[in-house]
Length: 240
Image (tube, rainbow, N blue to C red; front, side, top):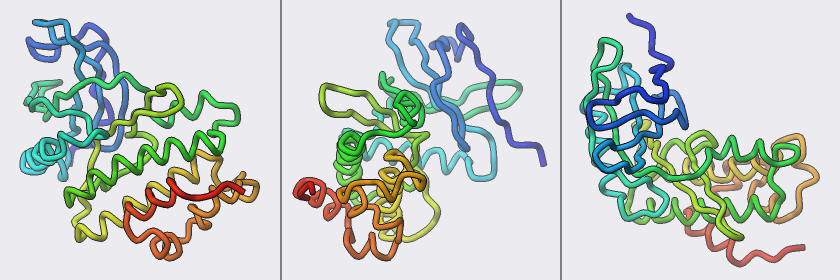
């Protein structure tokens, strides 16, 4: 079996079909890479996600993923899908999704800009609140994300708030209700991590601990059985 590709090694100025030029790589993960591209006919900036070839990224899986993005196109947190392409790169066909370009930074990179590589409690809760609103929209449509982490959430600071986008989704083959519960746990884990993780957890204010609950999944899901319950808590809790 051929080794799984780790990068497409595309550089600024490279052509991505006759329609697009590569500007820069803006993200990467286990599934593939995301590039900032320019549409040559209009000069508009787009994003291209190129998928690595492996047993999970079949044409059928790719088509199902594109349909999911289209179904969630009205959700603010979902990057707006435009169309699909099949590209010829380095002697193989590569599946590619073209979408809007969101002018933000990956959450993992945003954290590095802060002292101690952590967000202050209020900012962490504000970001997680905006993430929760986005995931609630997805769950309301009976879908789920399935792969929330700091490497696939793009963040733009706007005034006192955050705007978020994500393009990566994953289906682990579990029942949808279980996947939605996993989304809740992933949101809570993100709060735990961006606020400082294990090293600072004991020093966190009650507002953080009352959500993270020591990362005990049983306690978290008992308190927040749906993403709606987590959103309602974030809107009504009292600071101590």
